[in-house]
Length: 166
Figure (cartoon, rainbow, N blue to C red):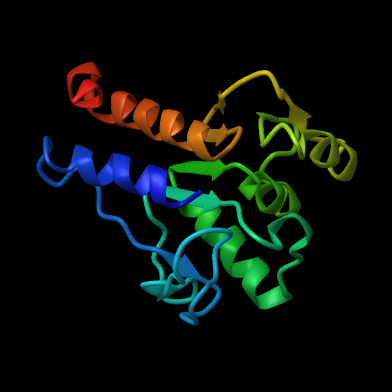
C-alpha cells in the first residue's frame, strides 16, 4: 500500500523541484512488517511530526481492527485536523473511519473489505465501484494498485497533467 504511492511521488520529484517531501511515520519508530516485502522502519513517530500538507494513511496488517490508545488517537486527530489533505490507501480507510474522519463522507476501500467498512462505520458512505474517491479534502483509494492511480491524481491536482503524464 505504501510502495506504489511513494514511487509516484518520488518520480514526480524528478520533474518538479521541491514537489514532495516524503516521510514514513508510525506510532513509534519500531520496524513494521508489511503484508509483502521487507520491514519498514518509520522515519519518525507521529509524536515528532508536524502536520504535513498531505497525510496519507496506508492499509496493512491489523489496521481494520486498530483502536489507537488515547495518546496516539489524540495526536492522530490533531495531525489530521491540521493537515490540508487526508488520503487513505486501501484498508487505511478503516483507521480514518475509526478516527471520525470519514463520517458523512464518500470513501472507498478494497472490494474485499467494503462491506465490513460499511457495517463497522454506518456513518461512512462507501462506494466500492470507484478506484478512488475525493470528498472535499479527503481522498481514498480502493486498493494497492488503485493507490497508484490516486497518487497520480494527486500529482495531476498539484502539478498539472504534464507532470502526471511523466
